[in-house]
Image (cartoon, rainbow, N blue to C red; front, side, top):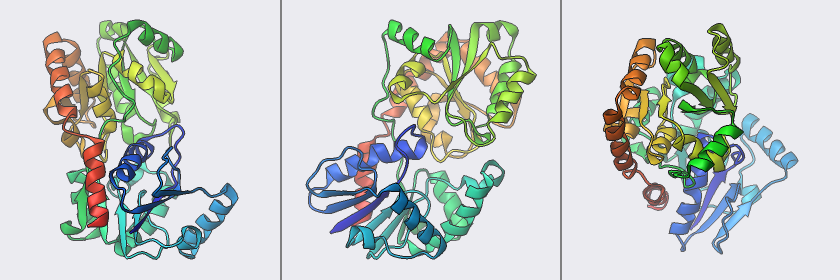
Length: 367
């Protein structure tokens, strides 16, 4: 069989979807030597005889994107040839001739929290996701919570939706070299002890709530721990900077910008606490990254985060500032709790692996 996969997603400065595909696609094709794979977009450095990589010049890609968005024509087979199965990896499909079509929808944040989605993206998703679901034979999502919401919002039977959990990115590991950690901290303007957040700076991540909670901590704690916000600027990021100025926290809150992949392990490993108070997540890869680096985690008790974190995190209500603050104080104030959480985190992260995920997706594709 010939399996087509849409891999047209930025691989530089990766965020959630980039990490997902970068970790999954090579393992999916590594698992299968009997079928032919055609990857439209990134090749992820794959070099196998049964893998064809189709990378289009930007001007041609833009032309086809325009046609697919506006008239849903021509079939992608015009570019890549025959496909028996096609795997769409980013919420929507493109026209294709294939016997089986599988669609990945990581979450439906745009349905549950439309106020957190940039308007042009919201319009696009509301217009196209329902059509893509109708044209697909199977839907893959990344948590039971997301599955429940997909079935609810699109009124489809649960049998059509399969859950495939994610794992911790392959290049994240505990860094024990304190000198290396200090070098990386200096690179990002971090000094001393710190509370860490990693993710795109956007409203859905609830960074305003995190900064409010940090500001309400005792002065002694604020002097002992910086708040480090690691991530690229996203939609409406300016409001986050405004709240830092409002509380005159410029010397205590550090904005690192995007953290290079090679530096992420050291940034996690050097922190005292990872806080992830997001209003909504499809899964929550940063939680597993923190577990892997031996850092205690405070996270929101919403959406899929309890599925990822299990009993290894201290939970908070993301829309209640005092809840976030008290969770932070509880963990930072008790070394025994920290050690117990770190041990549970190491155990918890072993439940998730990209190898398991890749095997399950391959089985969904070819069965």
